[in-house]
Image (cartoon, rainbow, N blue to C red; front, side, top):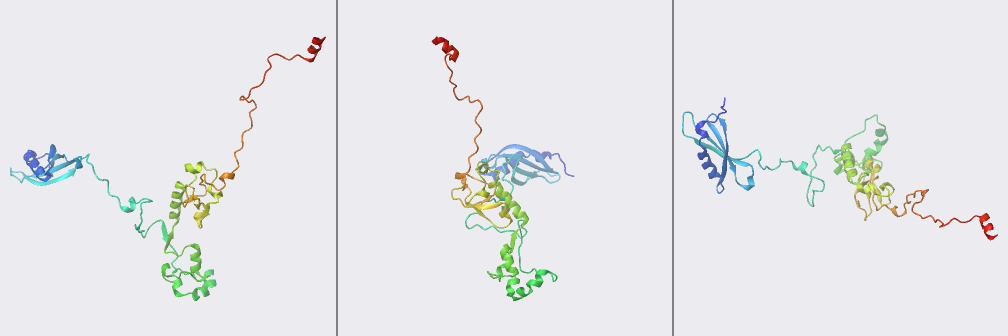
Length: 294
């Protein structure tokens, strides 16, 4: 079992350790002696402060040792190590986790992992309907009449214009004629991201006269996302060319100029902003006027 008490001769070899540290740190010099730590039986490490501004909080560690029953202490190793308060580089993060939207530039390539949760396999042409399927009975003749490359092989090998009425034509219409398509998870995170940047909770939408669902500049999109999103085509709008939520809005709404004005409140019962005329003296009644003439 290793001793926790530093060996006396090794602990006293401070100058030997300092000389070894100065040789490695040249042209710089190690600072004050910080501490001594026992690494084992007759094995001790001396720590000296590092004065280099680029290594703030680091320490020169010089390990010395002596053989059993020997009185001569020798240098085992000298190395620069970080201390408790050392300035360290942040922990390395893989590029796939560091990448953020907008980081890609012209010429950059972003490979997609095979098990990316945002994607799922598309139609490959290898799936065949079961024998008892109604589709197989009605479409058998059309499928057999197609070229073999249309129903077999990866999507990149399929012809650009599949024959009308074929399974390939149906996959083309549904947008499934690709090796991989967006999964439900991929659709959800995309919708959340778009709604956060151009959704109903943004300050622009809160101050808009109306939402995008009634704007003439909204370009509809297909698929399930078309039920909640579209593309803005107003070149003067803040979201021109962006996918916007149907509940988003801005001051560039196509009908903003003809929007009905907000109803004005009813006039107050007592208008304190007007002045009521008051006579300086009370006007005489009709009976009093007759007595005056008599």
